[in-house]
Image 1 (tube, helix red, strand yellow):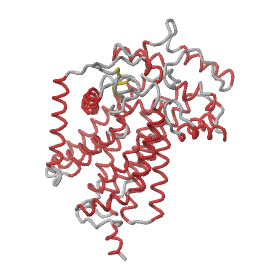
Image 2 (spheres, one colour):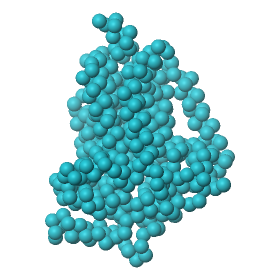
Image 3 (cartoon, one colour):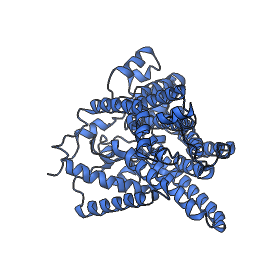
Image 4 (spheres, one colour):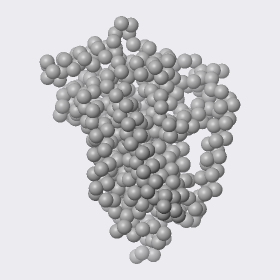
Length: 479
């Protein structure tokens, strides 16, 4: 029986280089510490209001969502393309919030924080089970929880789709860790079902089958030959098919004013912009400063800068490939980062943004894994450096928590968000397109007062620019 399963490629070969399952269990206290630290850093968003950028269309000006969770609302969520997207589970989540809390922003913020904290814990457990390295897995999960680039995904109600997608994505990782240890049809059905829920939240998860193949390479070590590569790819065909269907759906959803044509944004410009975006995200991962909600599209990037960045990315790729035998995590982490960003890197340009912090929510996990495992591997032969490494790790995580805490304050309301955006970009159409004489925080104050007086009925007095509005004012592309 065992031989038959191995021929089919459905059983994980024992790997003596990895710890036994008993030694790779995640400690409950570490999981609790990750959950609580996430809540502590993010909890004050419960006092925040809506912002007048996408929140109106997603929640407080959306008549369907404002009715709460109803059968008509569920049909509406599944039956059409709304806000140039198709993410029915995200809509249902907003409806459920309204049914439970009314059209009040505070509780909806807290729900997003709880989802983010849950994803952090699940990620930790999944990595610990796959690698057997509990401390390293906890560090990666802590970086995911506390990194400033993730504030946009967690503190913005309209980005509920990000945290939902990540929740189902991390659950998929946990299910896969169980599946490869002991294959069963029931586990595979669970994996496929949760993956489907993730795609129904946001199609960013279409790259998950690719990520699972990378995990087969390292740490699961299930790709030791071309035959095993074929076998592991075949076993993921249902997942690849779901990704293909989701990709087609999201492309159709975004066909419209927001989708830029090749005449507006030539292919060469898209490739240049994608190259620079990979570098920008990488730079902000290590130095997360001057974060904005909207970075205008640069239609004339420096050719020399593009060339230098392309050479740098190529050098990193070559180094990861060169070290694949002794430091396999480098190749897995780097390709995780490159691959997960493909859907949003700008080769298919939607809207007028050049890049966005929220796009790094899941892709940066690859960088975290590569860095954490590399540093730990460098220090491992030197026991005397263990304590300094622990101290340095604590300093980095505390610094991330402090910067994240500061960045969270930017999202208190529309006024704080747009003033910050203008200070960073100086030409943000999100902030500058506001009606003259209308303070950005007025809508927030009016909504809070109306909600208290009328039990959840929201009065809206501020015009709300959306991604579609920005697409219509997209600057002309260079020739």
